[in-house]
Amino acid sequence: MKKNKLKGFLILLFIPLIFLACKKELIQKNQNLNIPKLCSEGYNYFYGWEGYEIDYEKSLSYFREAASLGSGEAMYEIGEFYSGGYVFKQNYKKAAKWYEKAIDHGYPQASFKLGVLYEYGGHGLKVNKKKSDYWYEYYKDNFENK
Image 1 (tube, rainbow, N blue to C red):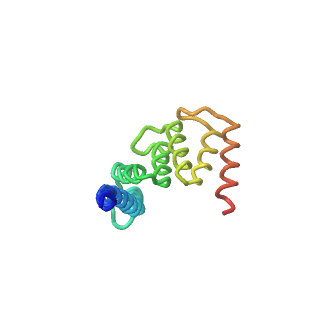
Image 2: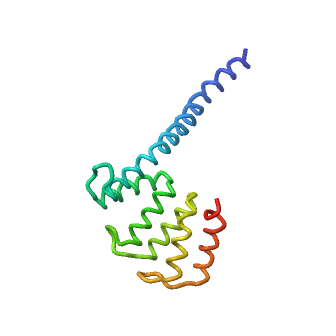
Image 3: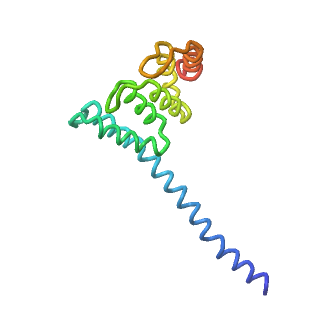
């Protein structure tokens, strides 16, 4: 009799934990589904596609939201805002930080931009031949031939 009570107690204890774990996984999947839509909206506002008015601040807000969900592509685009001087004052040092985050989140295309930034420097970033060579090689090994 005691074994049945213990089983019942354990089942009641673990059902909410299993539910919470499943709920967390479902929320994560839904957030990941939103990333392409958020990036698409960011591009639409940036380039004026699909009949949108160009609005860099709105574009940035969509990319920030996608970046907060872990999108390397969105992190790269935020780097582009800093690199190109859109919304922010042009700042290669901050752009480089966003490009590195993009790479860390599975967007190796950003490595080429890092190579360029370190090769030429400017806007808060010093020329660094060693880093430039590293990022060009990283790009070649991880993206160019894939």
